[in-house]
Length: 170
Image (cartoon, rainbow, N blue to C red; front, side, top):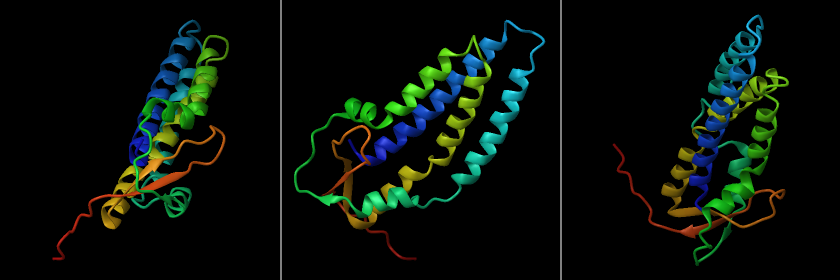
């Protein structure tokens, strides 16, 4: 799976997790009309959106992504295309945290409300990382693919030769 595609998938799944957790929080508070949990959660989501937007404002790659790109090993053959196993392998923690927080919606609706805020921060702060990776790919004439590793090991990338894009200077 291409690394830029994994980053896009991460942002989309994080935004989807935030939406599902927010809905679980609202549904969990529906049984208690006098509760202010939903209002407090909405305020937290607004703060999370501001924080995530601030953290994701730069179009450059974050240091961990830049390090992974720099440490990518060169290869001449395409790695095995396994998008869903790669997504599950790299994003299992997001899926487990979303299921665990969502499962507590009726017992403690503030838990999915808080978790939704963190998913909002994650999605908004990572929203430009795929464009930074694509810019490096176009500049260097390479493509980065995710190498198969353990789910708890740091991500490893493979660098493949690709077409280089020449942009004329103005």
